[in-house]
Length: 142
Ligand code: SF4
Image (cartoon, rainbow, N blue to C red; front, side, top):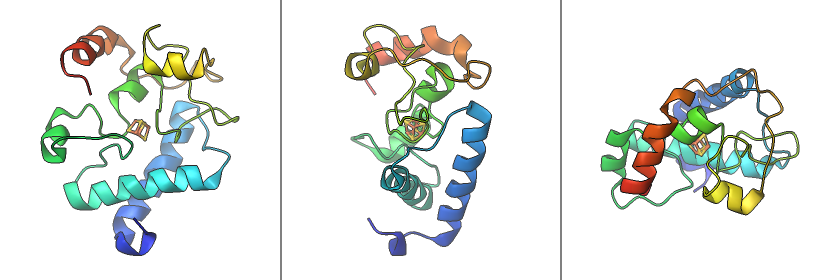
């Protein structure tokens, strides 16, 4: 997907959202520009075609149906509960996803090990929903 195929309105909206969310969550953009740019383009494309910024880094059998669940609308549940961004959009200054709050058996822990949160006073507004999220992760792998 190229930038020319995406509406400037969706792209501007996503850029604004990402800049604000970085500030709000105490995270950073990935140090390699192409990484964050690719995710932002994917979010903008989904915003344009689905009406919502569905996470562009996952496979969905049915995107329209997935939007109804809201789990993977950016900022997704994993970000708002665990501060974990598997797309590497919201990361530490070193470009690592924060894994400190993930359950031990979560794929993020298995891939990246323990990555501490550099700004524990920010983010995780839905931290109280961890039990609910884990139930969903077991019953509706998504
Ligand atoms: S993993 Fe979550 S926070 Fe990261 S880009 Fe996807 S939806 Fe957004």
